Length: 384
Image (cartoon, rainbow, N blue to C red; front, side):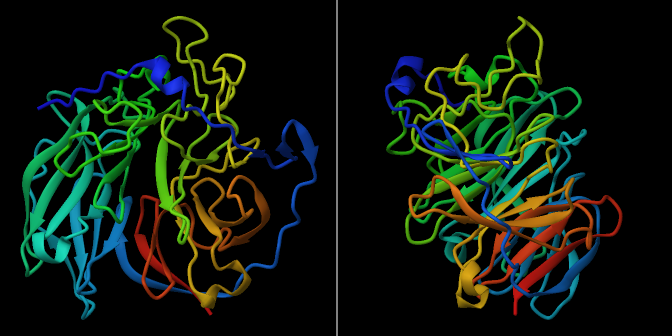
């Protein structure tokens, strides 16, 4: 059943909160430029290939028993068992819409996975064409995934598959945050009645989560272009997103309920105008500036996680951003208020090609998927 998601724009405007912004050429605080922080010395890491022979693996998760689950965008689930065996997981994906950037995308485990065996996926759906989040159950032997229900449907999809999002973050309270793309629809990001160009917040049954700006809507924030990464900051509970820019300004944003992040590509009626600013305070009054932006050109930023644990040394607690175009991991040390970047460093530049998803593990290491389209891998990146 399609979820009701009408949202009053006035209600959103009243809860907008201003943040600071950082760009590669300057840090902006209250309109005053400041020098960019110098790049710091990156931490030493080891990189291990844990799965190879994949085709565009979009996401990867680790179950409590150590099993890794990943999915190829074109429509295949793959597991790596704790003993190292890699096998295909049976699942009915006959209605998958896999075109361009759209297909089998975000994967997440339910908070109660050990009891429920529930897996959430975000994927394109064919006939009718849209993007949906499904709940599946996987058998204890990790052989078969069975679809149980549709959590949310009606996320827009483009004919060529551009800007589908779609990342799922399971909050410690059991609710779901979902980053969506605008599907190149000019009015979607600023339209409170569209699920495109948003971050959604909902209960596992698909109803709006408590604390949403409009209690009757799943929309949490709006004014986004293509949100593909979400991460919670340990110790603070702050929620961050990363999204792909146009010809400039990939963005990391600190999300607040009802926040509008300023993407409005409808300057000419009926035209998807990608020349507009990623954050446009003139045409979107009250638009919240980014915590970090890439400047020009973009580096294509699909993944987001926090580096956690003493193994990371002075970089423990830093935000990690993956890059497809830049073929690297970017480490961003945040200010105490979480609204700007004080230092940055880079890892793995040019070593493994395009890097997509980031999944933190309990031991402090990160799972990273490559996005090269030929012999893609799941890597484990561990600080020395």
